[in-house]
Structure formats: structure tokens, C-alpha cells
Image (cartoon, rainbow, N blue to C red; front, side, top):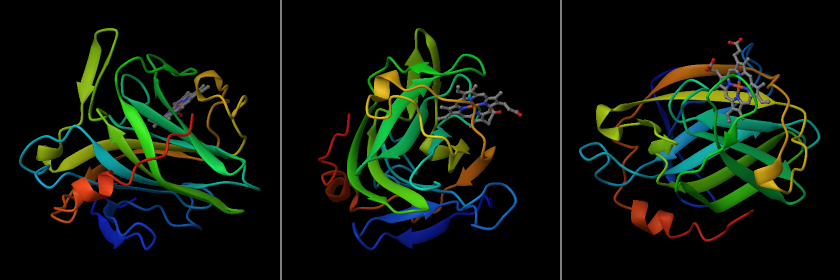
Length: 208
Ligand code: HEM
């Protein structure tokens, strides 16, 4: 996908995101993939500790999972996996030291949801991720610094659903089968917004 952000405002929540879409119909992944962020108003001058994320993933008959790496590579980065099951989109914060099933993340990062939409071809989650831009797993640490004006991020998608889908701590996954990549997500002035605090207050739902 392009490094330059596409700015859009989600109609349901009114939240404005910088996003880096992969178009539906491209060769990288079936069905397209979009990740976006909204950041606290001062995030381009003071490193933010949290963000509001927009994660739209491709599914087949409401099955599949997708994820982002907040550090770029799969390994040694805070990972967010998300998947639909029933009427909910579940998430799990994970951490991998190798290219195998990631462990549960043991740090204090926290996801709460603002909205979730599931249709036959895509699942779309808007969520607040607190304490997500710095991570530490048993002494292995890293960070994504918003003041650098670019986030190095990774993405993956897969079509099989996780095993144990309604128990995020106990999911089982197969290696992703619908594309992956690392990109430099350039932030522009639309990423940081004076309304961030009001938007973050909409994150009242926990799905666990
Ligand atoms: C890349 C395995 C779960 C994120 C890879 C690669 C392997 C792998 C072998 C490298 C493939 C290549 O370079 O051709 C697995 C297995 C998983 C798993 C076996 C679970 C059983 C996850 C999860 C996430 C994730 C849950 C994120 C939420 C990534 C990303 C890449 C990647 C972003 C591309 C960047 C990189 O190469 O480091 N994975 N993965 N993976 N994986 Fe996973």
C-alpha cells in the first residue's frame, strides 16, 4: 500500500483517520485490507501512548482473522489479532519471539471498542488501544514513536477462523494465508485531532 495516508471520516462515529488501504482486487490480498489511526491532539510533538484504530479485514462467509504488528515485523512487536464470531469482533493482544503461534501479551495494553460491523465479506472494528505504542514482554521492549511522523507497521490476513473464537486468550491459529506486509505509515496533520479525547470516551465496550 502507499505510505502516504488517505484521510477519511467514519460516518458512524465521526472519527477522522489517517489510513493506508490496500484496495480490494489487488494482488497482495484477496478482498482488500485497511488499517487507520486517530491520535491524541499533541501526538506529532509528544509521543502518544495510545491510539484509536480502524481495522477492516477481508473475510469469507464471516470467517477469517487479521492482524497488525505495531512494530512492523511479526516478531518482538505488540501484535493485535482480530476476528468476527457471532455478532462480535474479538481481539487478542499477542507477542511473538519467533515465527510461530504468538504468546499472550503480558503487558498492560488494553483494547476497548467503539464500533464493530460484520458483513459477508468484511469485518470492521474501531477500537481504542491504550498503552499500545510502547511494549515490554519479559524485558524485550519496543515502541512506535508518533513524533517521528511515521509508524512502521505490519499487516496480515487469513481466511480460516481461529479455534476457540470466543475465548481470545485460548485461540489457536494457522499461519496466515491471505497476504502480509510491512509498511511505513506516514502520518500527516489529520492524524492528530483535538477531538481525540471525546472520541476515545466512546470506547465503552469490552469484548472478551
Ligand atoms: C510473517 C508465521 C501468526 C503477523 C510470518 C512469517 C511466518 C509467520 C513464517 C514469515 C513468512 C515469510 O516471510 O514468507 C506465523 C504463524 C502464526 C502467525 C505460524 C500463528 C500460528 C501471526 C499473527 C500476527 C502475525 C497472530 C499478527 C497479529 C505477521 C506479520 C508478518 C508475518 C506482520 C510479516 C512481517 C514479517 O515477516 O515479520 N508469520 N504467523 N503473524 N506475520 Fe505471522
